[in-house]
Length: 139
Image 1: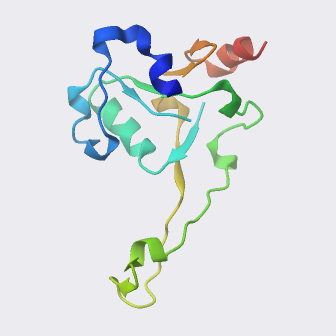
Image 2 (image 1 turned 120 degrees about the vertical axis):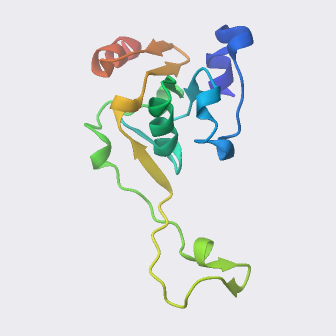
């Protein structure tokens, strides 16, 4: 809910688009918003940011200030959790891949800061350079 409360000032310009439709539909929106510098979020965020950039659509991250880690130098320092291979290799108890196939199933991806237009938080909007803007929000 924070994401929509944070951008309600957009009024009639605010549209919701299910992320399953992206990135193919991103060229039809005025801005994209995805919640959580570099951004660690569920798989698909990085692809969405790339699609937004390719279509000239701003990419905003709406996140509560409590989720912003100012001690993290960049996304390279984030350990990415691997989810169970069974999530991709099976449906129920039925194997849908070759037995023993190697699987990479990360729980989230990292979106580099260069693809983020701004962070929208409950304390305000932060534009690059993020280090300066975030320092103001935390003080």
